[in-house]
Length: 249
Image 1 (tube, helix red, strand yellow):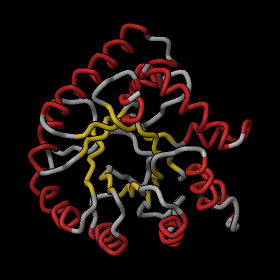
Image 2 (cartoon, helix red, strand yellow):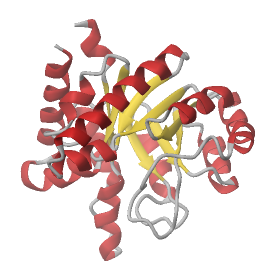
Image 3 (spheres, rainbow, N blue to C red):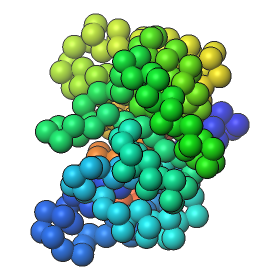
């Protein structure tokens, strides 16, 4: 049972805010989603405050912190504005992600190798304030080693490519990507990094990722919010939790 407890579920509530903002209304409220997720057994809440505020907005962060008693994982770009916000609110964790205005969602991992010195300087005050720093990266050896060098405590491996290959029915490529995730999770763990994974995970794709012994947290959002339209958010989270636990058994 100990290994099951180590696999945490972070629920990303960004797209509740996406629906709200489509009409410019006060509903649906992402804070309410955070509370439901907590009641359903989520181990943390993830929220991405983007530069263009396309979903989560500043007041959401304030309200979420007040409403929940589980950790907040604050996803953010490596900008001065976002650093100031994180330092002001001191979330349990910050996850540094790449961000482009023209993308629909985060398309890939952060290029730590290219911006190693900048990122090392950027994350130092966040760590000093007590936030755990995670870097969202592709399953790539050079990126993992660079994340370790800059002082990140956590890496979150981008599972989007694996999930896309699953639905494209490309078995050989999917298995190659899964092997890469497995090997890179082991490498990150060997370097003393805590290993998380996320992006694109669904009921159909979560099991092989949840089976990776070095992975201790999955962050899942878009699928759960979409599934909640049909089954309700609590039920969607409970089913995902069940699949994760079965994978660990």
